[in-house]
Image 1: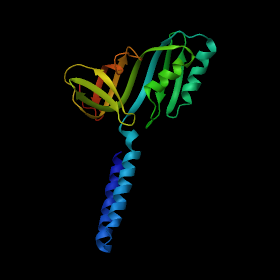
Image 2 (image 1 turned 180 degrees about the vertical axis):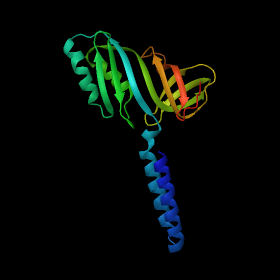
Image 3 (image 1 turned 90 degrees about the vertical axis):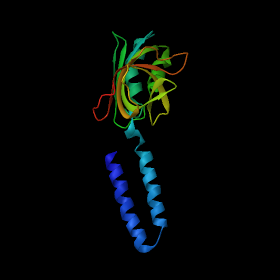
Image 4 (image 1 turned 30 degrees about the vertical axis):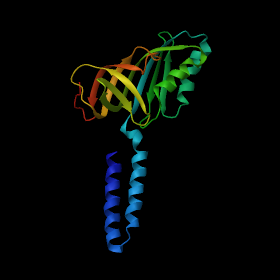
Amino acid sequence: MRGLLLLCCHLSDRTQNGARRSGKAGDWLGVLKAAAALCVLALPCLGQWETFEIRFEGVGCSSCIESLPGRVQRLRGVESAEVDASSGILRVKLAAENRVRLEQVRDMIEQDGTKARSAMVSGRGQLRQEAGQWLFRIPSQNVDYLLEAGKGMEAGSNVVLSGAIENLRPSDGPIRIKAKTARRGDNSPTR
């Protein structure tokens, strides 16, 4: 992200100086458009899920369990997926700059009648307070997660979060995450 910002600054300085010399203000507008495009492309860098550990139950057949890691790995952005059938856990590691949503993986587990019950998650995103509640959001996904956390939280972007989800299909609103840790990406604690 820092590299993209430096590139944008460098391009804007060069184009602005060139536009002054040539008298072509249109060159400056082109740089602004290019900078905006780079920022859109960099959006996944601002936040994404990093790992899921999803507990499931009610598996109807052994072939369903055996095929689950392969089905999950077909999602673009999944680095690895493995199942511990004896404890009913799917562990998913995601690649950098992925756009994989927790709900996608949950729905994939439940395709064959298996129930995804709870999860441990870690990711990077934005933290904000709205109407007295803390919300965690991954910018590229436009999904808010209700965050149950202690005092001392601070709103901001580039927050690294790990926490537990007790119900992956709440009937009363967004998925709730009980924060284990929440810190700024620069290693400053927010909790």
